Image (cartoon, rainbow, N blue to C red; front, top):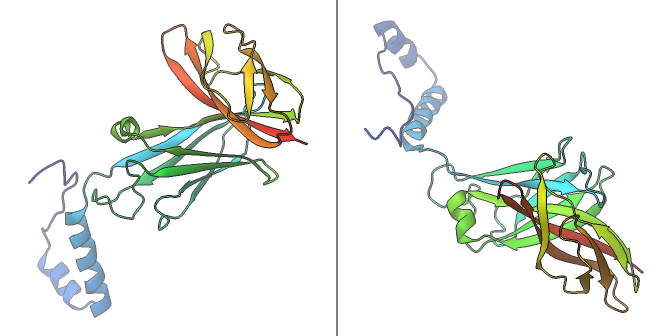
Length: 231
């Protein structure tokens, strides 16, 4: 028996009395026992994908009690999953492929598009982010989406302060990984994370860019900056 596929054992050492009791059970009860035993032999180690990250306000403080909804927009047969951020603004959602068959019981596949929707404590949607599942994320079984929320006004520049994901580690530098499509980030202080965000003329709605935080120990995090531009 492959112990990796069957991480548990089932004892069949039944007494005569137990057998007689089982024979007196209703047909539905016996069917239930049969289903449980068959399912036990089919079950394997559960591959789990974790979708998680940290949600922060513009000043870097955590967005507490925010509702995070993660939806696989490629596989619409999967139900959306929801969770609430903790005191640190951290969320974690599990996707499980119960039988390791790539079936529709919660599995995330390469190339799937995941949508992360953030709602505040008053249930107002404050950000929506979409990203495609990569080969690295498949290998790591971890999909990370850290988000920092900002607000700006149409045709007006806004000084913003980028924040780290890990508040304990010492930050050595900030850099822009992917620039905004509907504006520009300039005058970035790589040490402090302060920068100027300027939306394009006559643009309102939402914009986003990705920045990277490098820590003194050599590790790093990427964060999606989501900007709500009011008219």
